[in-house]
Length: 183
Image: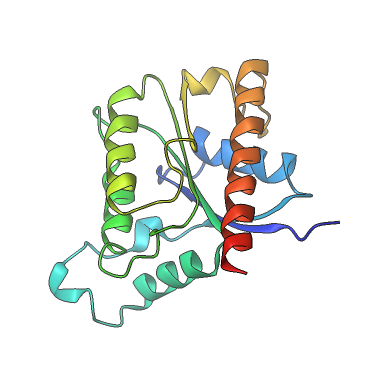
């Protein structure tokens, strides 16, 4: 059996029982034979980004960056807030701009929201700017997400489930391609 890929999952929602967290937990269960998914739980505790502090050893920031470096790939699952990127998620990403943890790291973006189009487009642009690997093929917009993922971490919508399966397969393939090229 192939070694499971280490995936760091980041929920753009700080709610404890968010649809995004439910979706990440569903992915962790569905693909447990292929990926070892760790959910980053410190997004709400990261300090406000300040460019003057990028070289300082701030424990929460250092921990976040290290988790990104240790991961083979990343999954960001986020809602859209006011037609944009949730502030806590943007703040977390800003802490990595000067240290390049996302650069050439296979990163899947799932926007799971009521609408999500504007926030999804904004976050895609951010991820392209910080050089997240293969982002054009590693993206999924799930509209009306609450009707497709339940509180028991079950993806109840067959179209959404098929799309998630395709996305995770592409993420694993991207990781394997980079690993092979580095060998």
